[in-house]
Image (tube, rainbow, N blue to C red; front, top):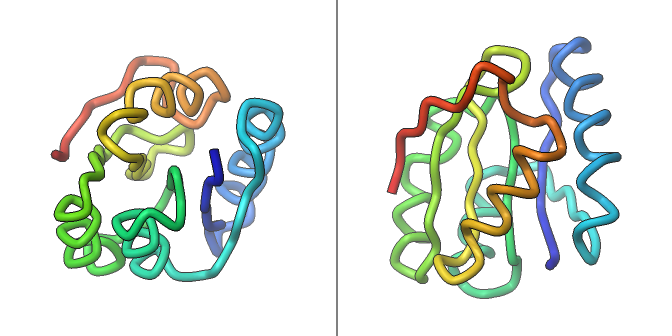
Amino acid sequence: MLVATGFSYDRDVRRAQAESLVRLLPQVRDIRRLGSCALDLCLLGSGHLDGYVEEGVNLWDHAAAALVARAGGARWELLAGASGRDLLVAAPAASYDAFRDAVLGAGYARSGGPSPRGE
């Protein structure tokens, strides 16, 4: 599984993201960071990526691109991230549940449980 991610500008959130990424890395083939949530979601929808996870994305970062990803067969959710910001998780529908479980197991989401929103 080739996974894309991004990192927050907030130092504390970035630290939490890096710690979760260290736990996720052994469960995936590799990680990519292109710097654009929208581009990553479009690449996911086109089949060039197998997953996307990032905490702290804003609506304008993902709204249109999430539709592109969905049109390409991807599924996505906004969960409660470990630092209290929205956590965007996306993957092809066939592998979404396994990817989401890996993301949650890596500590990306709040321990109180996710509050899902998405498609």
